Amino acid sequence: QVQLVESGGGLVQAGGSLRLSCAASGGIFSMYRMAWFRQGPGKEREFVAAISRLSSPTYYADAVKGRFTISRDNAKNTMYLQMNSLKPEDTAIYYCAADRGLLPASASAAAHDYNYWGQGTQVTVSS
Image: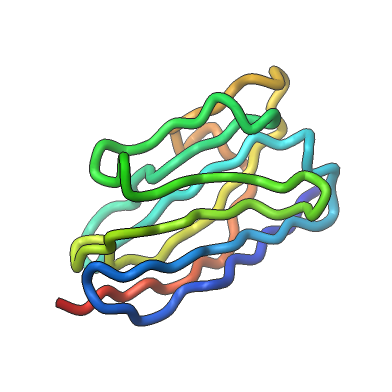
């Protein structure tokens, strides 16, 4: 069973950048497909980005496409989310999620596909 710990959140001005990390332990990281989700104040949890076990393909929500980049380093058991050109509407708690993907090139944007979740890291973007 894999455990996930997010880090890298914080307060940033609009237009700034942050890089989130998701450190995994307790499992063979390369066997898990991964994703980022977020939940803003008063909003439901929404998909942000997903990455397969092989790092390709990757999927992005339309709201972050072109600004955010998801990546992973299987040797370091860590997934990343590089967030550039941040907007106030990106303010949310960001969660990483993992699932034992059966297919190496499979990625999913559906929250119900993921069995393991981190505790989240707060990202606040000021205007």
